[in-house]
Length: 77
Image (cartoon, rainbow, N blue to C red; front, top):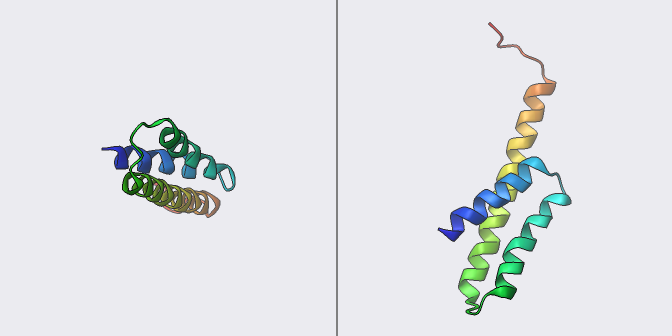
């Protein structure tokens, strides 16, 4: 479940904030890691990877949205 939360977190930061501000999404998993009593390295790595994938997906979605908006509205009915 936490993987989905970190993916959505990265997706939101990647879509709404551009680089380098999108990298602020890594502060959430880092803060949770520092506050956790059980620091499992596997869970930490999976959390950071899920966040990174979300950021990349958000950046791709944002760039496609900007390209579609900049290209005009050819499909208007």
